[in-house]
Image 1 (tube, rainbow over the protein chains, first blue to last red):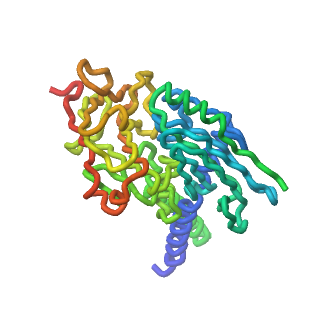
Image 2 (image 1 turned 180 degrees about the vertical axis):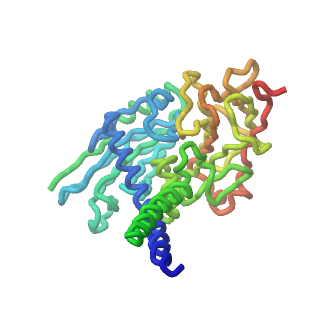
Image 3 (image 1 turned 135 degrees about the vertical axis):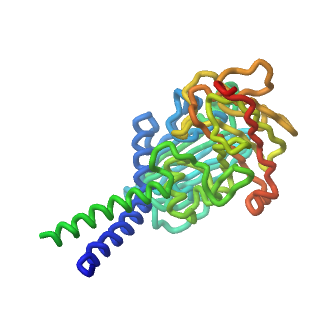
Length: 171
Length: 199
């Protein structure tokens, strides 16, 4: 029996380690795959992509709502001194500017009911500044949602979206 | 040599067990498992209010990354999912249901149908959801069916969905919902009306 003790201990340790490692890595792996999929579907780096209305034929993200206008911008702040300038144009109904890091965390959300919102996104480790948000990871996704439950409202939201801005500034 | 083989087998088996158990406990494997999970359960509508947050446990984070990527934190929106009807049976394309509800504790809400892959069902019916604006104030009702019903104010199409679930989104939720979901939310009910092939 004693000769099986070592292999059994190795089995338990490897099980625990693989279990923890899988859970730790899964969000990052899924986010990376999602970012690659978004890039393949034309979601630009450092620019809000003019979206199509969400339908079964156009959906690219799981559990998208067909009642919302989504505009996406991928970002990469890996170059030293880089800053992302962001603006969400005015919209008379519900809208929000949401930030997701490379681990899928929603690390900030700004609501803009009937008003435009401007903010800067700074690289990880930056000092906090008024009017700026520090990203926990160098890469991530920014998502504007606007309430637009029908085709006419979606077209109006797209018009408002012309005032949206996602632009990289490098030092 | 036998001892070396025993260690090797233990390592390979351990890695496989760890990987499989993590994916299973996070609801990622086998494919097609429901998003109906979490610490909140209001009459079968389930959620985890840690969605989108760093405080979410690793199982929730892994599951949400797969099934609810880019979901907002609870102060902005909450998401509740239900995969069973009022009788406790899985929601199926071959059945017709009546979805009823009332006033919701948030700025705007919607109920959307998703297939087992967490995608909108592959149909062209243009009837994927009901929301606060279409439902109007007060009590509301929608029929969930694979074909447009003859008489119904609102229809959610399940055509092409197979086994499906419903996600209730509540944007700008009332503070009371976050602290006492069971006491605050008048959860929509899902009554099964009929099923194809049933006597």
